Structure formats: structure tokens, C-alpha cells
Amino acid sequence: MSMKPLSFSDVVRIEQLRNIEATQKEHLSYDSIKDMPAYPSREFHYVDFVHRLHDRANFLIRENKLQDALQHPHQHFVYAQRVCLFLALLLGGLAASQAVSESSTLNIYWLLAVLLGFNFISLVLWSIGILMKIPGLSSGIVAQLVSWLPFRQHKELTISSLASRAWWERYLTGRIGKWRISALTHKFWLVYLASGLALLILMMLAKQYNFTWGTTLLPDSSLPQITRLLGAPLEAIGLPVPQDEQIIVSRIGIEGQDTETRTAWASFLMGVLLLYGIVPRVLVLGLSLLMQHWYQSRFKLDLYLPYYITLRQQLMGSQMETAVIDADPYAKKSHIQQASDVRRPIQKSTLPLNAIALGIELDASVLWPNGISCRTNIIDQNSQDQALLTTRKLKEPLLLGVAAHRLPDRGVQRLIKELVDNAAQKPWLILLKQNAAIPIASTRELAWFRLAEACGIPADQVISR
Image (cartoon, rainbow, N blue to C red; front, side, top):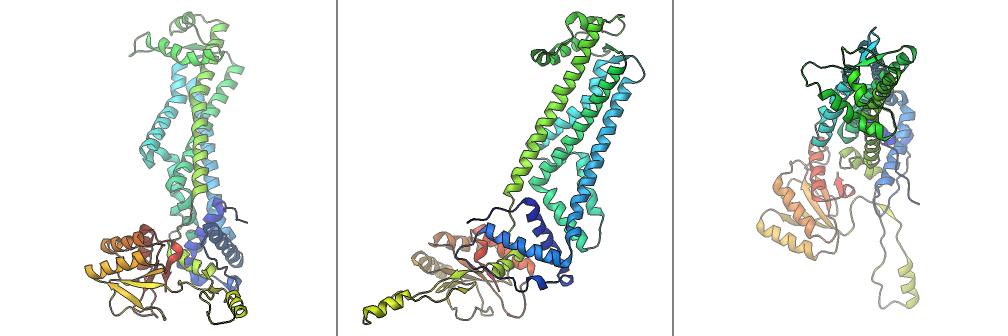
């Protein structure tokens, strides 16, 4: 039975623990996972491995009491989000109250400009940022400030700061972060518009207002045309909107406005705020949340990192079965049946059996594992042609040895990629050292893992010794 993928928050907990172990490993206790069994298998499955990582992370988190440190960044983000939404609530109400002031006459287009103007500019900039992939425009200034502040809380590399950094990097950066911060931006403007509209409704319920319009720079016919253009969709859904004669009598300087005209302008104001302000924000908020959840469901751990390579070998290993292939033709039939039925026990190994080893520009100082001899060391064109010919005819597993103390270059990458393309099955890559007692530098190790990824060699077939 296949396991279900972990939730995004569970995967982030694994990343938080990885970030902590990278620099604070000596401060952690590992007693709870000393006897944690490995489950070797013939094939590597990402979901199974991540579940093993999750179990290991839960043991270590409980043992070292890291729950609070891992949850703090999420709590800080929730608090920051609430502060932003409360600020939007105040700003929306303040904008509406300032636009109305103490007068009993409302300038309809000044009110719409105050409530919808900045919202419209923000929406246009966000759309440009999304379409042109400009992070600064698609995120929004307030939301960027929220994502920037937590990184300034801790300058020292403590367990809490490392957990926070890992959380913020996964939740608020990349594609997931872009859509999460977009959602926060849209929530901000929704609350701003909703609070402004709610205050206007309360004020119009408690007081009678006359609606006017006027312009100095624009032609006199411009605002009536805009009114008819904005009111067409409202009229199509059955909302009353000002007619031509009502628009004319509402111009500044003309006295007299009946109840029907005031009602038409009030419904026009609320309809425009809903249709051109709140509805678009609800739609883009839904899109942002949908894309956020979609990218979270597709997020995968970078298994080519040395941390995960080491844990893969510890937690998963590889499973191989050996058996008698060619029975003794001179043995009795009963003996043959017994021999063919006998299987050696499954054993955990990190190297394939009967592998044919090829070296990639190795010198005499590198050390191969016991029992493995290099058939060909590719150092020139002749040895490369010989290796390619061997690879094309090969049925056994192919093991490529590289010098771990060297940094991979483009020539080595092209050579390994050519061998991978000509092999019948994916080769294994082993990082060979000059001194078995000296560990491989993490930067060199990561560089070789990245090369393996670029050449199409699976993460579970990269051996670091």
C-alpha cells in the first residue's frame, strides 16, 4: 500500500531540522534514533523516504524539545498578518471618513478616487509583476516588509534563528512565497475596501447626503460618460443607476436633488465599490490561494543535498538479492531443484554487485573501495572511445569513479552525460578520496551532487564515502 504524501508543513519541519543540524548538531541528542531501523528496498521511492525523514524528525524534535522553536516563525507570521489586516481596517475607515468629512454633500468621484484609486494602482502593479515575473511588484510593499522583519530578529546562529530562517525561506520565497505574499496583499486591500464600504453604508443610513460631481481640467461631458460606462454592468444586473437627467442635476452648482436621485447615486456608489473593487480582489485572492496550494503540493525536498544523501544511505539503503543462476549440469535433478531454490539473505549495500568501474580523469592518489578495480581510466580520446564502446555493450551495472577533491568542470560533465546517455541503465557515481580518514568538503560534495543531477543520475545512486 502506497503512502500518502506529507503535508507542506511537515516537509518544512524536515527542512527546519536540516537547517539546525547543519550548524548546531553538537547541541542535539540522538538517543531516540540510535536504534531506528533501515528499510532497504530494490527501488528508491521519494514518498517512502520522506516519511522516514518525517519519523526521524519527530523523534529528534520531541527528544530535544524543539517544538516551540519550530512553531515560532509561523506564530510570528500570523501576528504580522493580523497587524496588517487591522491596519487596513483602520485605513479604509479613515479614508472613507475623510472623503465624506462633515458635509452633507458627497463628491461621488472624489470618494471613488480615494477608495478605489490606490487599490486600482496596486492591482495593476501586481498584475504586471505576475505577468513579467517581477517579485517587487507582485508582492507589495507591506507584505515585503512582513517577510523582511523576522530576518532581523536574530543575528546569532541559534536554534531558534535557524528554524525561523528555514521556515521563512520555504514559506515566503520562491513561487510559494510569491503567491502567499500576494494573498496577504489582496487580503489587505479587501479589508481596506470592505471597511470603507461598511462605514459609508452606516453613514448613509444615519444621515441624508446629496451627491455631486464636477471637474476643472476635464471636459464637462467626461464624467457623465464615465458614469454611464461604469453603470452599464450595474444596470444589467438590476441595480438602479443615475440616468442622464439625474446626472445633469447633480453637477456642482445646481441646487435640488430628490430622493430618487440620491438613491440612484447611493446604489451606484456601492455597486461600483463592489463590482470594480471587492469582486476583482476576491477573484485574485482565490487565484493566489489556489496557486499557493498547488505549488505547495508539488514542492519536493532537494535530495541531492549531502544531508539527504547521507540519510538516504542510513534510512533506506539498497536491497539486492543473489541466487545461483547456472546450476551444475552433472548434479542430480533433486540437487538442482534444491540449489535453485536457495537464496542468500537480503543484505544492505550502497554499491551494486558485479559493477564495471570506470574512472573519470583519476590520478594514482585516489582510493577505490575494497573489491572494486577500475577497468578503464578515461584520460584521453582513446580511453574515452574505449569506455563508450564498453558502456554500449555493457549489461552489468556501471560505476563511474570521480576524484572528490576536484571541482567538476564542463568537460567532466559532458563526458559523464555522454556515458549516461550510452548506458542501458542509469550508472552509479562514486566520489573517491585521496585519504579515507579525511571527509569530503561539503562544497565539493554538493558540486558533484549537482553534476549528477544535471547528468540525470538519480540521487540514490550517488555514493559518498
